Amino acid sequence: MEALRAENLYKTYGHGDTEVKALRGVSMVAHPGEVVALLGPSGSGKSTLLTGLGLLNPPERGVIELMGQRVLEDGRAQGDLAALRRSRIGFVFQKSNLIPFLSVHENVRLILTLNDRFGADTHARAQELLEYLGVGHRTGHFPEELSGGEQQRVAIARALAPAPPVILADEPTAALDSQRGRAVMELFRKVAREQGTAVVVVTHDHRTLDVFDTIYEMEDGVLRKVERTA
Ligand SMILES: Nc1ncnc2c1ncn2[C@@H]1O[C@H](COP(=O)(O)OP(=O)(O)O)[C@@H](O)[C@H]1O
Ligand SMILES: [Mg+2]
Image 1 (cartoon, rainbow, N blue to C red):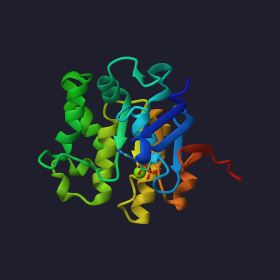
Image 2: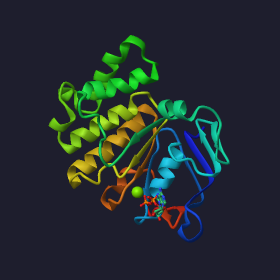
Image 3: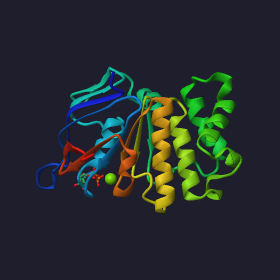
Image 4: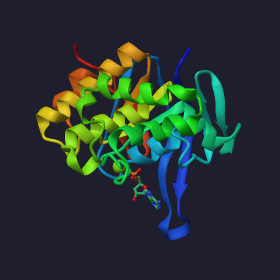
């Protein structure tokens, strides 16, 4: 079963003179354990696709399925979108967007508490996740005390916390140097392989494409799969 399936997504912003067709019939799939890269020039619709897939900014036409469950059909939510988002989708953005006045541990734990799935074990699970992502020594610190790379590791721990089948990351390494950027991409691959998560990453960094199983390219709201030459 696919972790994520999107069929024929359409999204238009504005109307008349200001109309922009940001998605024009986009289809894609991502399987459990697969790491997918999404390339394309600025303004081509990558963020619109990612926020569409993540149900933050639902497309007005098309179908989205998560783990075989239809969650969107022709712009209509099939269920409680907020609850689906919280439990089925992990987001990672260019900036870590951690809550500045909560410790690293509290940032991760908050998501577990909201999801109400880990009961009294939220403390241990948050610690375990942070250790898994290589920032176990930072749990008591505040976000501003961490490097950019460490903040992104915490953001990945938070995204992973509810054990979602899908993680969507929009230019997560754009603010990192190339070495730390690669380390983060490799971490996504490890998470995919070990947790069975499908990870979709928007990136401009062609040097890390070897990390990915599948590459898509977006241009003017149209998505195509890039065939790799070995
Ligand atoms: N909220 C919005 N309102 C109007 N137009 C938007 C909005 N968001 C994005 N767009 C337009 O949609 C197109 C795709 O944008 P976006 O998905 O952000 O592309 P990318 O992430 O590839 O840079 C662009 O032309 C952009 O200007
Ligand atoms: Mg974007």
